[in-house]
Length: 402
Image (cartoon, rainbow, N blue to C red):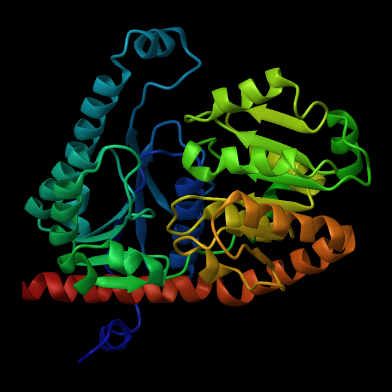
């Protein structure tokens, strides 16, 4: 059977038609991923046009065509804050999303291949897939997460996977989470490294950041970075910190459900002087300082596919402690680039963080350096772009044969 790479070679090494990439959020981890992928695809000869948010923060080459069509009610402006307070922002955003999809249909028809990076509310995403198929486009879908948080949307996910010509996942552990139709079309392409993001952010100042936070220069520091969600094991990290009196913990990210847990912990006084919180969206320049101040980044996730935070940690030469959940262990070499806890519970986390403390800063620096090297070797964008281009060619061929 001809594989995707064979299809690419037979098509003359490059997919000459434009690919319409859709990443509607414009900021955050999926947007960062999309920016690096689009640039790498351009380097291997794939012409990509990006549909994204009007206020996007994606860094793109001047040769990349951008369609800023997604408008969102975000915090910061009086009208937007009012819409959130009265509870209509989701409705407004949903209608705006569908309108933007309609505006992209002519571009999808010309491109013939549309690549969705994650998506909106699953039922809306399913509607977008139907619209793109009606426009005659072959769909490549990268869900980024193969699970739901809270309410499950199995039917919407099943429809999206059935309509897609190829489904891209970042870990072998994702495959069993797909439907039978999705698994039959699945391609495992690793999440790319984030060296370019770290370079753009610059080097953080470890000593100055610790002094600003009131952290002793020689204290062990564990960082939890990114959205503050309950499923990221924040309660486990706090419980572990209470049992490790030397450990300082730093949380940096937007509150998406676990902020109150941190505020309650601060009010309790149990971690007085050792719990540090920077709440809100974290610009790259700030992230550089948080990673510089930390010895290790903790990903005690209860559920996971793969993690952009993990790759960002590697880019900042910071080792990780991860739970053996989802695809996380596939990106960590235990004892080399970080620590994989033997189980996903507080006792195991305490043991691994105890090893971080006993190893000291020198061991963390050793593993952080190894992590950065491994990321460049195993998760380089040039290889990922070639595999993605092959996936486009295969998706177009499968769509024509459908």
